[in-house]
Length: 149
Image (cartoon, rainbow, N blue to C red; front, side, top):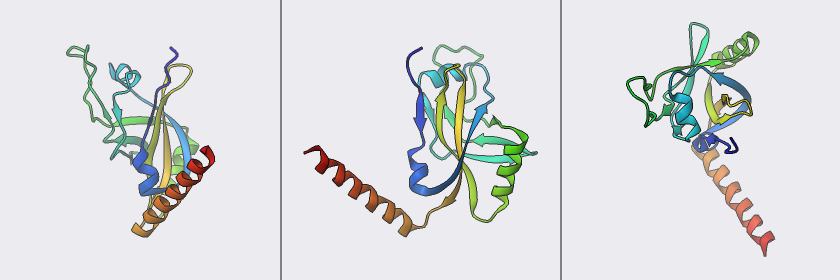
């Protein structure tokens, strides 16, 4: 397959400071990978949480596969993330700090046709930080436009 599936959570970089990133596998069931290959995924409002020392992504919407029968999956179920014990321990220590959370930033399919999720340890932005990031984005856009001419 030559098509590259990369689904971004654009809201994440606007709402949070992304401190540290990790790549995790996802435990999928049934027809979920087929829907991911079609690009029918939404990462908006999704987040990661620990349940019994295992990391799960919650609220990630993978649309039902249109050719699926009664074996189709539930769109917003909790999906387990596959990480090493060392990475899980590191993430658990970071989340226990005040004000830090784990959010998914990018869903992609690698060269082995496996779905991977890039997650980031993040700290929420204040309103003035959001304004500042919009201002820098606008100035960068103006600089890029002036270079074109």
